[in-house]
Image 1: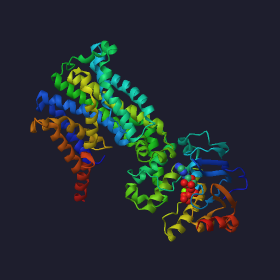
Image 2: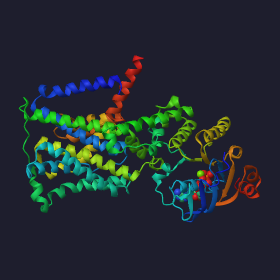
Image 3: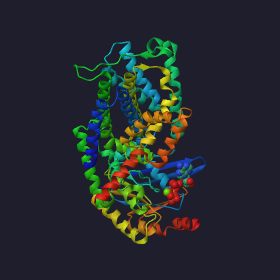
Image 4: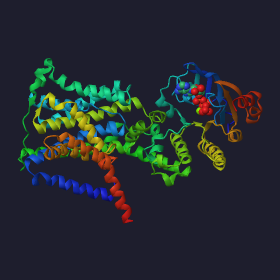
Amino acid sequence: MSRTNVILLAVLLTAACALPFIVSNYRTFQFTLVLVYAIALLGLNILTGYNGQISLGHGAFYALGAYCAAILMDKMGAPYWVTIPAAGAVCLVAGFLFGLPALRLEGLYLALATFALGVATPQLLKYHHLEKWTGGVQGIVIAKPEAPFGLPVNADQWLYFFTLAVTLGMFLLAWNLLRGRIGRALMAIRDHHLAAESMGVHNALYKSLAFGVSALYTGVAGALGAIAVQFVAPDSFNIFLSIMLLVGIVVGGLASISGALYGALFIQFVPNIADEISKAAPWAIFGIFMIGFVYLMPTGVAGAVRLLLARRRSHEI
Amino acid sequence: MAGAVASQPLLRVQDVAVRFGGIVALDGVSFDVMPGHIVGLIGPNGAGKTTLFNCVSRLYECERGDIGFDGSSLLAVPRHRIAALGIGRTFQNLALFRTMSVLDNVMVGRHCRTSGGFFANALRLPFAIRSDREAREYAHALLTLLGLESVAATRVSELPFGTQKRVELARALASQPKLLLLDEPASGLNHEEVGKLGALIRGLREKLRLTVLLVEHHMNLVMSISDWVVALNFGRRIAQGASAEVREHPELVKAYLGTA
Ligand SMILES: Nc1ncnc2c1ncn2[C@@H]1O[C@H](COP(=O)(O)OP(=O)(O)OP(=O)(O)O)[C@@H](O)[C@H]1O
Ligand SMILES: [Mg+2]
């Protein structure tokens, strides 16, 4: 990392820690969701941005993670923090297993298969034989965790800090993964799969593992999201969520780690802004924002920021 | 050069046949490549040269025959294991990782000589860091050897064609192959560059103790650097021998005149 990057990161971290003491509880809650989406988008970006496998159904893994957390907490009395690694592990396995048959599919065909997963998920969650666990259409209400050790923060603030810590950990792991041997292999598969295999990359294994890791990230996000909103129900995880995640990585920047954060801010706040601009046609306004972003920043917000920093650096010299 | 003791062929192609629908791309081709040799594989367009390379790389399945490397058959080896066995290659139409830097391309070439999976890399375990550092150093050394050091951080898609070809060569060398397959390395190069390429291939052979199988239309290049030449036409071997013999071979003359 360059010095500018380290300074930027330090400023950002300080601001992130100060934030819940400056803004309202509701805003704090919204920023918790931004962090949650950032983790989910990072997961999708590992798969789609870095490895070139498109997914229109990542909402399914988000839902799986969310239900893991809800069921563990509500039906089994597990503490909330246990549900995070549990949801991650379940989604890792689910993603890997889904990735295996998906190996046979490329491009648009993979898009269709994942789309099928995305649309089927809410219906599976309503399946009445599973009702005992999932709560059917009603879903599950979960209790809000309180700050431990008598820390002088309220529940919203605590959950924000908890989510922030998980986010930092997940981003660090992803950064490690992507800047080394595995990241290079994943991008090589994306750029030229036959050449990658001729260089000794085990494409089938790496693509399935990328699916698994991607699902793990999105599942962890789902669990955190469920705890934050204190509720899961099938219809919160419809195909719209999957599409929004895809919008997030494209607007934020494909194959970029910081892009996940920009994308998360976009999908969390732009719908609200659009709603304030026009109550009649908020999604039309959202669409205009989306097209505007992509038009002005064709490599995503992360790409634009990178260009800006590079330009500043060349001015300094 | 091949030593007196090197009597076993490094690559043994035996009666290999490949068909695409009605097209017979290879029709019972056999030849040997001795260790330390530069073997030229020539023939008119569509003769089956690239198809043969793709069989050795396991990108295509052989319908018949066998390909032996270092004494054992390649036909049961999965594609991604070929590099680790010691076979490196370049592609006729560039097959670089376009969005990645020159250095990263070459480091992917070293994938099979490095270790550390998803878990080790995510946690940056010491052995994974070490392996990464070693790969970086090796890649830099190759870039220096091939005069690519100044473009190490450049995205390959931004480089001129000739430079991209050299990046492919560096990437192929990164796995420390015993056998290097070069598919038309001189295409798109000017006269002077072709001369340098010949010297480079010979130099690499000495320095890295390579065996080279070279597909090339540039006859002067093939004939000047090859120890042995194999000529194909319509998927069959029509001649083989030392350059001087093959150059005069009536079948070869006919093949080239026939397609000119
Ligand atoms: N994947 C494929 N599918 C169908 N036909 C193929 C395929 N690959 C090669 N062929 C056919 O097999 C024959 C041999 O092709 P190949 O590419 O091996 O020739 P080549 O000797 O490398 O020619 P060139 O000098 O033009 O590169 C040609 O008729 C070609 O059209
Ligand atoms: Mg060819």
